[in-house]
Image (cartoon, one colour):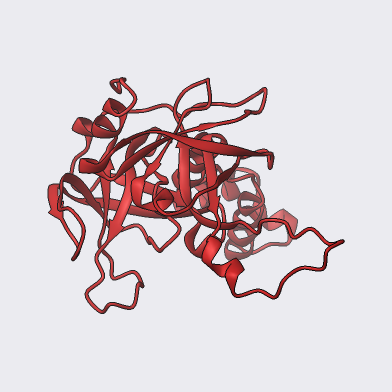
Length: 256
C-alpha cells in the first residue's frame, strides 16, 4: 500500500503541492479512512436473523400473593417479565423455544421484532431435546420466519452468533465459534441432552430458546444451556444448543 501511494505521489509531482512524501501518505490514508466501511460479518448475520427473533415473557402467580389487595375500584393488571427467547420458524407464526423457558408459567406473551405483542399458547413439546412449540394469537402482517440450515454443515471453528434477551436485555447479539459437536450435557434434576452444539458466544439466562445462527444468519441451533461450574449462573465460556435438525423435527420439518 505504501509503495503504491508513494508511486502515486511521484506521478502527480507531490513536491509541487508542498507536501513531503510522509505527509502525502497521511492525507491519502485519512481520505481512505473516511470511506464507508462494510458491515462486520456478525452484523450481517444479526440483521438477517433478527426479524424472526421474539422475546418470551411470562408471569409468576405466586408473586401476586405477596402483594396487598387492590382497592375495589382498581384493577391490577398482570405484570409480565421476559423469561427467554424464541424464533419464528413458519409463516403462520410458529415459534420454537426451550421447554424449560415456558414450564411453570400459566400465561405466555411474545414480543415480535416490530414491537407488537401477542399471547401465545404451548401447542407442542419435545422434552428429550428441551424444546417447546408456541403459537401466537396474532402475528404481524410482515412477519418473516427464520431460514434454517442443517447443523451437519457445521465444523469446529465456524463462526456463530447467539441472539437473545440475556437477563431480559435485548435483543442482544454475541459472537463466537463452534467449539465442538455431538456434545452431551445435563444438570441435576434435568434430563441429559444429547447431540448438542458446543459454542463460546457469550450466553446468559434469558438467551435460552433463542437462535444460534451461522455467518449467513441461518438458524443452526436453539440455545439451550450454559456450563455453570461455579453455580453463579454466569457465563464460563461454554454454552450448548440443540441442533436445528432436532428442533425442526418438533414441528414436522427438516432444515435444508
